[in-house]
Amino acid sequence: MPAARGTREAAGARPRGTDRASLRPLVPQQGPTDRFAELLLAVLSGQRPVHAMLRHTAGQAYDELIRLAERGPLRTRGARPVVRDIGWFEPREGAIEAFARIGAGDRLRAMAFRLEQGRDLRWRCTAVELGGPRPHHAGADRR
Image 1 (cartoon, helix red, strand yellow):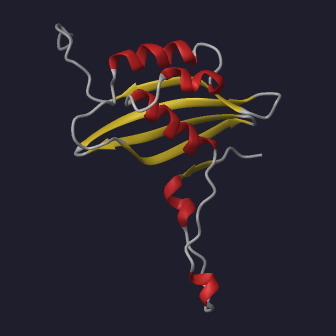
Image 2 (cartoon, helix red, strand yellow):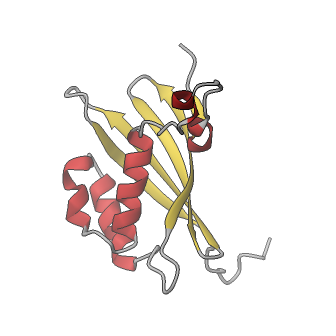
């Protein structure tokens, strides 16, 4: 089976039809990538405590989330951060590697996370990383 790829933007397509019922906008079914992106954003922006993710993580992901949340990387003054876009790749059945673009005003950050489905069929986050502006390191320009 080929690996699935996609973005949330493509999920909101509307059907074509002539009757009034078919003109109602479709509400895309929220998949695990959408739910986890929103949960991770809430924790990393300080809107929810880290322990809200305790039952939604596995392995080292919870420890990494604690380290990230302590720095408050997505806390902002002014515009509240939102998930602007999500994309994913399915390297194997039961595993999803996803990214989310997080926007707050004119700032844009990147968040990557991995989800794995357990034997109980529940999805859990097994890795999380943040990207964005990085501080300049002394000597980085030397070759």
